[in-house]
Length: 511
Image (spheres, rainbow, N blue to C red):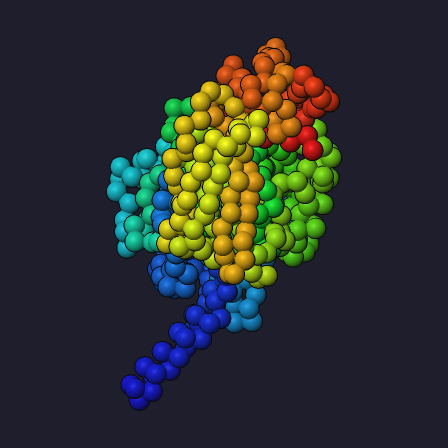
């Protein structure tokens, strides 16, 4: 009898693992067989702990890559319990349907700190309360009121493989350590609660945009990406390519440099937020109302895009829908095949990745690939060459040849993969990289004028030097700008762009 029960339990857990499914960084986990959805709705502290252990056991392992590539704090996960019929356990939306729509009143979050397995110390609770008292009011202003009135429990677990975890089924968030940015990030997920968006490029991107804006307004609190100043944000304009899209918008198992997806999608929505500080409150209010009538809106890109486009007419001087389609990280149907991708655009060490993406969106890094590189000046003169090989993670980093002065250099790259040759022509900038800086692909000489449109700063004009420029004075100016290029021999070219109060790289290609 004991053997029979043990075998039965073993096969049940195999079935449980098979039944759990993942979409991006959202994992759907069936509730234990002896519990009902009603049990979860009314869970006390002891049952919450049991459910947490159950969810933790059902989480996938973190992506197989060097942890440093996830960024300073790592990635997060969202866990949703599903009942025996496969429907999400959503107590708050169920309760909302029995009352007047909660979107007509402001929802509010309160916090508890019940963590029996790894208890918070009194000092840690005081730190959490201090952080939340600073962050929560600002998040409410930037993101809009929460969807529901919730008591959110914050659990501590230093053994979890993720920086943070949020479960809308149990109204609980889990922290691996007390890092302010992770506390803020998971708290913002709780604002949407059961209206979390199934596309990472929306859910994680909007959450990151709001998180950065919270810290922009808390200058005494450290954040590693204040004002979108992290390297991926600074080089958004160069990295903005369809290659960085993700199948269905879910990038958790996407490119090895997962931080890149968080950062690019965060800055994409950050640009909208810079132009319209009321965008996220408006978006969320419409999302919550729509999801109460049809929960499917949270995983429908056309419906989500319709909400966004209805709120924002233009971004960076373009019609919203046109702008949206030009943001590579927001591309939900990225190209398939083998790719070379450059990550460094200045005269620092040059970093490049080689990877393959199949039709399902799965990406495989290509190790041991020899890559030939040639560097040409803006006048077309060979400035150097090199041969590199990708490491076990499918990328390499190498010092650039001595590139004197300020200028634009072309990088021609070729690599044999799967019996064929793939190639990439890109650019790097040698010289000053402060303020607003960048390259113009079609001109070597002339001038460029950067005009702030909504800041009390005068326009700045600087010369083009070998196709490159630098405007240090505007680095800490936030807002929308027009860059106007006037080549000595060529046609005048203008482009709008929006940035936060940090350095920004402009990749100007008039073709």
